[in-house]
Length: 228
Image 1 (cartoon, rainbow, N blue to C red):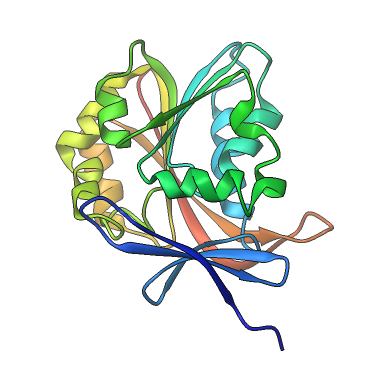
Image 2: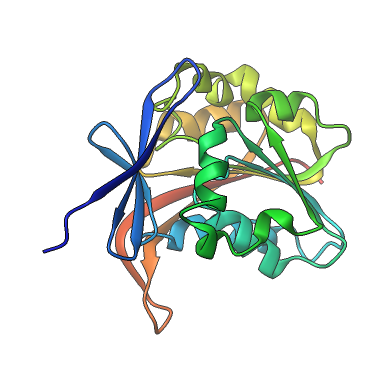
């Protein structure tokens, strides 16, 4: 049986320690006893991108903000489904995440961060939302295991009413805020509705097999729309 091999560690600013492990050809990023992401489970992270783009209704040259990079599944799925004039800003707080992407996981990154449609911003996605130079078509959030600030206590502001108001103001009319979670959270869904979003909750499988069928645990994505 193959043992997990520790590849590297990283300290989240004002937050937890992350560790990158390899297990054969697979990689996983772990925080304490929580496996935050793995190359074995990518289906729901890819769905975060593809299902958001579907809800944009085919608009040309959209601008998406993705926070954070993780293992890049959401970014690569977005690139595969967007037109050549689209823009994607990726906000990532932890420098080592990008170093791992371009180092031991370079085959998985596959040059996506060098795509001319992509702009990488090293910093807090909450600040990227506030400082967006133009209205965004969509904001995609996958920075915790859910709307609870697990990785970093400051992330709680993303899911507060104030943070949701900031996201709503940063979106174009008819824009989409998409939030990934490992579990349902009725209070968070209600909070999004209270700030004026029309909210759709969708359950998606954590992985997809070779035949395209969903497998594994069920994750949740909330798609919160602004009025068109």
